[in-house]
Image 1 (tube, rainbow over the protein chains, first blue to last red):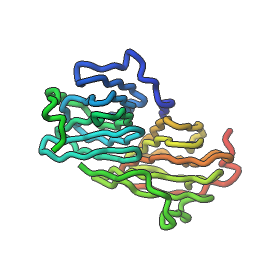
Image 2: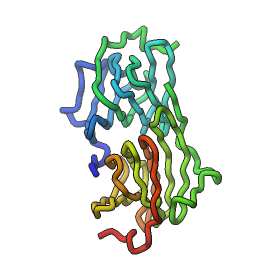
Image 3: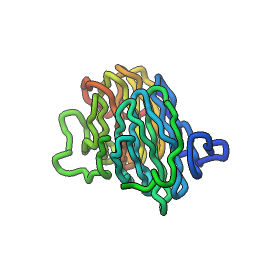
Image 4: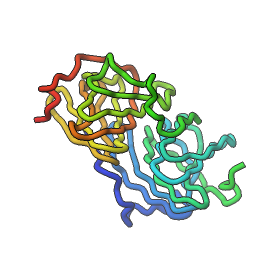
Length: 126
Length: 126
């Protein structure tokens, strides 16, 4: 049994920059046997870079409004309680809506392969 | 991309009895490639039977206070925001504290093997 306690507070050391656009904090709450869980905080209009998860990713939206988009153009809005599964190896990004904070639990499996940032024109959903 | 929307409402058809003690509702929000996510509602003092997950289980506590115990005697309390990983094949149960409701997102991998119910004397934590 391995337990990660509480929703961390988005401490200063959790502020990410090399793989995000805007202000994104993340705290690892669990890291076991290739399964990693992070609490992620996105200021409005913030998002990850494009990336792929070797074993896929499950996103659980805790609060706020989020966006997710896959490289093939499929996209969706995510609200509290929504669960979104991204298949292994599928390039995608996720982040907050332009006018909303976002808190998500991201559970991902295996290694992460990072790609380019998400430009403003990509960020606008179809 | 596969999305399960919102926190389901614990509909009547979700009320479980053959693998639970007390009142437990569950709704499947995602079922993809051996990864299954359920929202689970436990009335106070309710719990699952003993069970094992072939590929392990990640529990995210949304609201209330929960208990989890493994067959070897390891146990813990779980509150909102806590993430708990149970190793593949490890027999365990989870449920609400005696005086609290509990809502959890349970993400489990592979098949479930059910065991006996959790007696009142087992339910009391060490």
